[in-house]
Structure formats: C-alpha cells, structure tokens
Image (cartoon, rainbow, N blue to C red; front, side):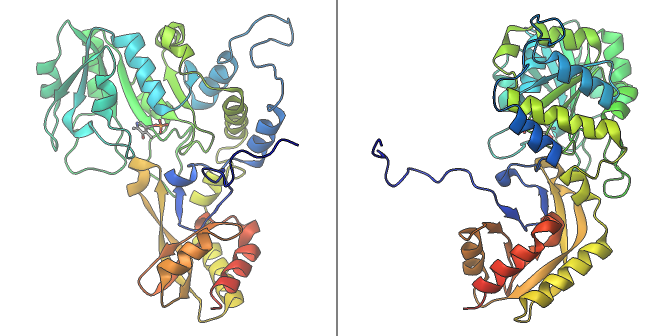
Length: 387
Ligand SMILES: *Cc1c(COP(=O)(O)O)cnc(C)c1O
C-alpha cells in the first residue's frame, strides 16, 4: 500500500449538494442538474466508446458530427456543431468568420456574464476587431448603418433576458436585413437554448428556431442553461457557416469530451421526444406547479417542527443573464437566532444543503429541491436546528 502523500488533502473533492436556494441554474453549483438518462449516458461513456468511430463501417467519424446533427434536428436549425461551452462557441465563431474584420455590437450588449467573463474582454482576445455602436441605453438601426462598411465581418447581437432599460431598439429582422445588404452573417448570442418556447414559466424567452426564423444566420447557446444539459456550446444555423467553424484549427482546442457528448445527446433526445420533457430536472423545476410547491413546503415545515412554516419565496432561473427572471415559489422558513451559522452548518453537513439565510430565519426554497430528497432534508434540518 503506498502511503498517502497528501494528508490532509489540499482541497475537498467535488461533492453532491442539495440546492435549496431556489436558483435553478446555480452557477456555483454547476448550473443544470442532469436527467437520469443523461447520468446513465455519462456512466456508459466512462470507458471506451464509439467517440470517433462509426460502428457500422469501422471508419473514422468526427466526434461532433453525431451530436451536431441531433442538435440541428432538435433545435430546428439547418446545421449545428458543438463545442466545450458558450464562450467557446463565440470564440470559434469570431475566429472562423471574422478574422481580420470588424464585429459590430451594441454598447448595451457588452455585458458581463458571471464574474470571469466579460464579452468585450473575450472579443479582444480574438483576431476580430470590436466595433461598438449606440450607447449603453439606446442603440438604433442607424447606429449600425453608420458603423458598417466593406470591412465589416459580422453583426453580433446578445440576448438580454434581464430587460435592461433601453437596450437594443432594433429587431432581429431589421439587423438581418442590414446583414444581408452587407453580405455578412448575423450572429445571435442567445445563451439560454430553448428548443421550443416554454409557455408557463418563461413566456418571453425566445427559442433557437424562433431566432433563426427572425433572421439570425447563426445562434449560439449553452448546453447547461434552459436546454438542461451538460456544459457545452452549440453553434446552430446556416450550414456553410457551421462548416466553417468546424474546419477552423481552433475547433480542436475547444472540442467537447466524451462525457459531455454523452450527456448532451441524452438531453437532446429528451427534447426530441416531448414538447416539454419533464424528465429534465431544469424543465421540471421551472414548470413546477405552485400548489404542489406549497404542499411540499407545508409538509416539510410540519415534519421539522420548531415553528418552521411554509413561506412565500421568489425563485430565480439563474445562469447569469437569466438570473433576473424570477418565479413565485414556496420555501420552508426555519426561525433561527443565527441564520448564517445554521446555513453554514447545513452546507458542512451530510449531504451538504445550500439554503438562504434571511435576517430571522433559514429559508429552504422547495422549487430546486428534488422531491425525492424532501425526507432527507427534513431529517438533516431537524437535527441541526435542534441546538
Ligand atoms: C451564458 C452565456 C454565455 C456564456 O456561456 P458559457 O456556456 O457559460 O460559456 C455567453 N453569452 C451569453 C449571452 C450567455 O447567456
């Protein structure tokens, strides 16, 4: 037996957490929890796989062609390819389609998406030149017209679910017309990646197909936002542009690995089989019925005792820009003299539970707690709040 050289270990390894924050796509907790089918697919792909071999012919096959075709089919796009994440999708698109040329974007869309990702900083690392148009709160079509000329490489527009006041006053259709006049692509950085509209929880969130129908040539989305899959980036749209991205040398550095691919394909299959696939935890949580959430909160509060009660809460979609979108929800409020201390004890417990500390209570939003964990959460909270 080799003696362990690191005692204690320099950091704790990844551990599973119960999310009681009500933030569905929690960035610190790894955004979308995977479906049972996606988890099984990851397990199956853990050994040797058909990652780059066509089992029918034994010949080499690109690792992205399978998931690319499936993504195109499910998202309603002529073609698609997949990369490591949303930021990689933008990076590859700019390298492949705008090297040495200008990328025109509204000043109101030069956003920060999570602490380590500022759009202008990422664009500055590419061989494309950033051209800002309009102002922080107003951008009109004339602004784009004045800034575009023969050196323009592409028009980039970023979806802002946070409904920033003012923002971009143009429409995708108007930008598409301008892009067509200039003979350059219109790229829509959509982020969320809904295959269809999600009627109940997010009535205004556009779908990929909707964006393409409105005139975008390419749509860029993340696999782990509303699509409900693993970290991944999808570039969907015109076949010639997608092929250009796939051929670029940088594609190799930004490619997905077999575990991501397995989970992404399983997630896309769920969307292929149902209009709103409830087997995807993200869909189930966003679509959860407030009456059921209330019943669960009441039951859990009764089981915990100690004056715990069901309280109204406000859940959030999460996932950076979507974070501004909130959903009415229900939580278990556990009165406490020191809510931050109780919250810290819960997070250090087994299993770790992340909850919110209000001024006078600990709040566990049931929207993001899997119903199958309710009993376990009750037991842990009851034991810890005893003191
Ligand atoms: C989420 C998001 C990104 C970043 O995507 P990652 O998958 O986190 O790399 C970029 N742009 C927009 C508009 C987004 O919503």
